[in-house]
Structures are given as C-alpha cells and as structure tokens.
Image (cartoon, rainbow, N blue to C red):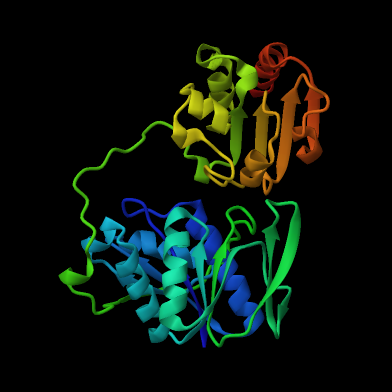
Length: 322
C-alpha cells in the first residue's frame, strides 16, 4: 500500500504547491505506515524530480511524454490512475488547482474511489478515514468520511505548509500505456503572463475594490504589491467595470486563494468575495465604512479612507525595508 501524489509542473519546473503536496503526502504516509510515491507527467529533468526527495518523496514515477503538456484532463486522469494501480495506492492526493479540480472527479470514477475536495490538513481520523474541509463559503468546517478502499483528495493551497524531510530518491521511468489517440486536446498557441506574481502562488496578495473609485487610481495598489512581492487581485465589480483584468478577480466566481496575508482595500466584503479568500491565514481590511461586512472576516481592520491609508502604509513598508 502507498500514498500517491500528483505533482504538477510548469515548463518542467515544480512550484511551491507541488512541494506542499509532497510534504503532506510524506506526513500522511508516515501516519499510515505506508510508502509515498509521486507521479510527474511531461518532460522534467532528473535534477528537478530529485527535489521532491527533499520533502519526503522517495519514489518518483516520471512519464516524460511531451503530449502531457497539452493538459488534456482525460489523458492525465488516465495516467494518474495507471500510476495509482502501479504503486497500489490507497490514497491519491492532488492540488486544489484548476487542473486538480478537473482531474480529481475523473480519477475518482476510474479508481472507484471516494473524493473529497479542498481538504484542510491531515485526516482527523485514519479509521474511518475522515478529513476536514471548509463549507458554507468558509464560514464552517465539515468532517467528511471516505469509506472506499481507495481515496482521492485535493489539498487546499497553503493549508499544510512546505516541510523539508530529505530522503533518498529513486526515479523510475513510467509508461501509462497511452497512445497519441488518447490526447484529444491540442494547443495551438500560448500567451503567458510574465513579470507578475501569480495569485495561486502568492504568499501575500494585495487586493482592491470599488472603493478605489477608478482604474487610474490603482498606482498605489501596484506599488504596494511590488514592495511586498505580492500578487495583485480585485473584487468582481472591479473586473466587471473593466478597471482590472478578470484574471485578477478573486471570489466565489473567480479565483479561490489562500495566501498567508491578504490585504483588502476598499472592498465591502460581499459573501461571494469572502468565499474566495476566507481561507487566507490573515486578512487585513481597510474601509471607511465601519459596518462593512469585510471587518467580520478580517483579523485586522483599519476604518479609514484608502487614499489616506495607502500612502502611509507604503511609506512604512519602505522604511522597514531600508
């Protein structure tokens, strides 16, 4: 028996989320008294694969076919299912990412496995296998029990942490038995964002809402984000108005994020917005309306005009950096 983790890569490189998954899988495997394995799909150098051993994964299956870079959900699910059977996995772990959320249901069907998405932390019980997840847009937790022999879970980002646990690596070439016909998705062109901190990877996120009044007032928000090395986000009304890109929209209908620190400038805190950011480790809200719902979810709040608070905060950050 073993625990299998699917580690996504970006252009042949692993990011924090993959190392967090590896750390979680290694800890879970230790508690269960079983081995831990990882499956990597697409071209990845052995030196990069070996990094997973720094976080407790000793056995890495590598299927290096470049066709996996097409992100064909069905093909990836088939390959991960084959890997799960190959290592006799009783638990398969994926990231609660766009790709992970697309693959997990397909994988659940292929393995006849129970599925829980957005898991927060290690199981509260191994017998029966019970995990905790957020419900009601982050207002409560629910303990969910999986009774099937094989379990599939997706781990909420930034819910466990990255823990170094160096072990001896063993990298194996793996053939899932797929043919060209299994890859039905073809990528014709790719446009990549460069020079920005991606929201799903950001430890700090600076976000703003309609309280900024207009798109031309975003300069201080961008400056603060740059100073903090943070990701940039906005509320849905802002993206709907065209002030900011829809790619920056966080909330129930946008990106779901879990940074360590989330700044909310001029955001009222509608339930749809809080549904996407409520799992942040620390929320700092700045709003001139003392009754704004965002303050109910915030760990720290400043009642004040964002146009007065922002310059002071920027200066304070600059002073601390100097």
